[in-house]
Image (cartoon, rainbow, N blue to C red; front, side):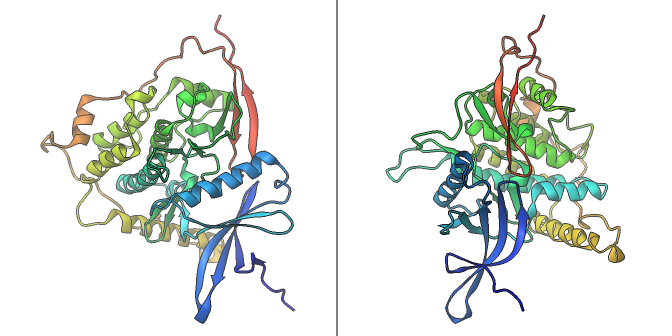
Length: 395
């Protein structure tokens, strides 16, 4: 005898568990309608052991509130917010059939290759458009009310099998119209490897902080490893404060200088040296994408890459059907550049020629070496680990 399917709020039927985290679980579900209508949705459920912890429930509610206010093709849509009699909360969201960018990058790495740069650029443009919609949010009366994501990372960028790219997880977002903050003074929230230097110094997160995180995501997607990584959290934290950006060229000589310049611009230590907005950075990447070989649609290729990676991941679970094909089978080839015109009319080319930001260590931050900053690291399992980092003062 089979048990009846779980029904949420009388209309959402849970189909299967799609993902398990420390604080919440995500279910694939269906909403039923008249005449056999059915629509697949995602339901994110806060776990019972966390619903009594105020900070976690506040972040969960904030994610639903912010998501419901943002309607954009490059942001995962929030459809509904429910609660059952036991006090469990549920966010009903758009279902994205695909995988996150971090998993796609990992699939390339495990196949012995790197993600083609045009695909990285295409994913970056779409993500920045979603970020731009959040940063440029306005109240009903027209006054600016920007939303800072504060948790831009490869695992919060979803890519569907048709190549659509959507930003998700606004649980740490801060809207300027809130009457209180979910972060205590002196506390920094966000995944450690994607923090900007000013946030690592204890400063306020701004849209420009999100752009720095986006630069780190692009760098990681091209190289296949974290931009800021070390043997300990403290070591990573020091790298971020000093803005130690490793050069791309030795690892990815195929990447155009224009793309390197855009990424370096986003990763500038001083916020006012970065792009003025997410839309400005997206426009610059769109110029870079014009350098890609003709005859292939980057969005379709991105969807093909996701579909191939998913298929290969499924094969791995069945050793008898394993094959060693690379992921994906389609590859970009960068056209030769020797003897090519300088392309001075291209904004991306001009940025590269100016050498806006050097990919070199920026040195220590004088006067801040002995300051302690309380950090709450968002771990991959969605739990939050409070840590106080107190670097030793220089002698």
